Length: 152
Image (cartoon, rainbow, N blue to C red; front, side):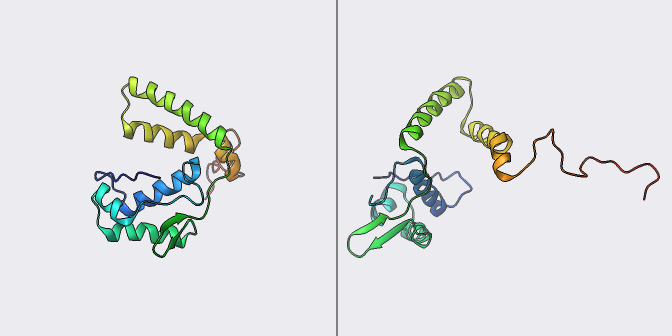
């Protein structure tokens, strides 16, 4: 079962943090269809949030088809995200944990790590290729063409 946590210093609303944690759990394979989410009461107690916050998160997850509420039984994972091989995900997670250890040893804090990861995600060539972007060496047609002197 997932153990939710809410970062009070984050600018992200608490309900959105809960939703993100479920989505991340589905992506990395720690949550699977049929798994039960904690009760609203237990999340309220463990995260010290308002019940409305948890209900809003669970409702958003339900509307997106990722969970279903069963009267008297609880809230259960009903959808999936991502299609990566669980073994590959586990191996990559281990590699990332080792890298994070190196980053910590180098003095990086959470925000430094997040900024570094975000910059790599944006700059990585595979992302650009999937998005149909051009590489820096391949400008868009007409891009970089300077106006001739005297042209209006």
